[in-house]
Amino acid sequence: MLNSNVADTTTLQLSSNTLSVLKVPNALTGGTGITSTGTFDGSTARTFSVTYGASAGNAAEGNNTITFSGTDGIDIDSGSPITIGSGGTVTLGLSAIPNSSLANSTISGVSLGSNLNSLSVSTTLSGTSYNGSATVSNWAVVKVPNALTAGTNLNSTGTFDGSSARTINLDANISVTSITASNAQITNLTIDTIVSASDLDVAGTITAPNIGTGTDNSVVVLNASGLLKTDEIDSRV
Image (cartoon, one colour):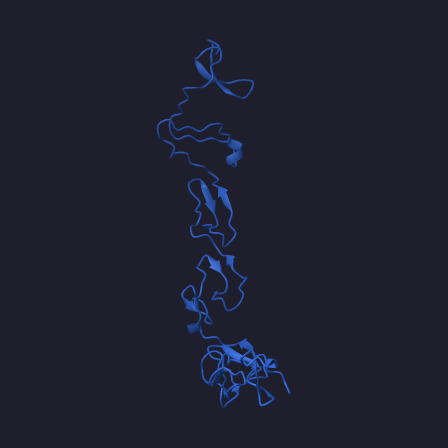
């Protein structure tokens, strides 16, 4: 015969010399995604069921695959569909992204994928127009915008703008009649270097207020150094 003290009367009971289990000491509780009619410790029958739905932690019922698709230039390169419970990897790729999907889709106001507005050369340059579609490296200077013209006492084969070689020469007979302004002067004029002959023809009056002084100021003479000086001549002349 069993002693009545062997049963704690909570998890075990003794009745008519028979020992039986009432319940387990720790109960089983349904967690996330599980629905039950209550905790289960063996004392009462319970039913635990899987919770289906769209909420986090719930199971998916019916179709057990997820299919991925791309748009706006995003492609699914591999891995779609994925079976729930089996896992997998989906690889994404990019192709033909439309400008409308880009935050910055223009260069200088022109949509990406289009040629830029053409940059053309002026009459002073030569070369191919550039719009960004191909490399251009044949630009060159043709001429300057303003030509150089031979002025007084100069002559040339034409105006010079860099497009053709020109030669500018001194005139054979240089005219200095234009130098008539107050205080205008010609300094160190050497006849042989600017004209073909050694003659100096003067149509007007020669004035030389600063000519060098010799012994006297009577007349202008050519001294032994080949310079014109004022000097005195023999009174017998």
